[in-house]
Image 1 (tube, rainbow, N blue to C red):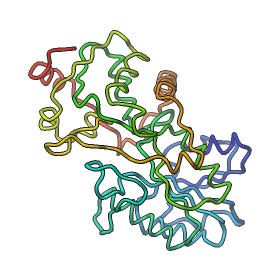
Image 2: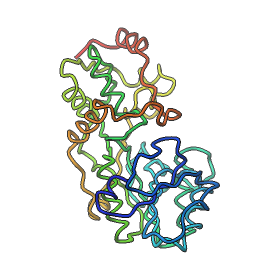
Image 3: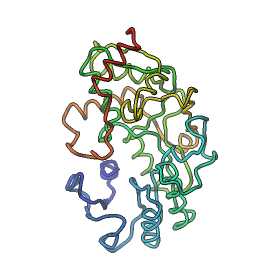
Length: 313
């Protein structure tokens, strides 16, 4: 977001705790502090827009929006498709039901944070329900896991369903679109994801293989049996559209509204290639987001699952 804003010629203030990336953007005004307790450290004056990239605590998000309501014309909140109550078991669009309870889990918290921001700045909030964000600077390690795994080569565990759709969003595409929407003070709810049908799970893994190491061998195996063998499929095999219970998941999020509002999605090959170039050239910082980092699949467990389930393909 900061890089895209600076590239546009915007004057940028970025507020963070300083644990990751301190001093990363010398051309922007950096203010250090915790969003829950230190908003008084923000300098005087006003902003055209606030872009909240990290909130999922409703009290903190609501507090920030209330504090800045008289100093900013617009508030862009980066939310998540996880707010949808019936996703991924059923297709969703912006009018689908969202979580309304007070469960202390990611999806319900994001939904509550959306409501908190809107209550503080009614009619001035852009709710950006993003898909999984990948590309350069992705320090959670989801796409980087698969890129590194392809680099290692050999037989790579690839759990079905290979034909399942997967909807990602390149951080660069998301940043440019959010900034354009913010410049126009556009409010409303938008799913910021690639359109359904653009990419399948198999195509993503094949892209990773082609970009990094075409000699790696994808071994497709029974997804239900893999899921049963893992303690946490999402962190051990990140990005995998795993079956939901005994049924294949739909994982479909409508993207028409954001597309009609100008969101442009680069080809998946450009996203994978950009992520690999960033990773290969040392862009990843040691320790960033270590508390949320995808662990990846233990190599010993991968070999055992391959021996039990896979024939290689």
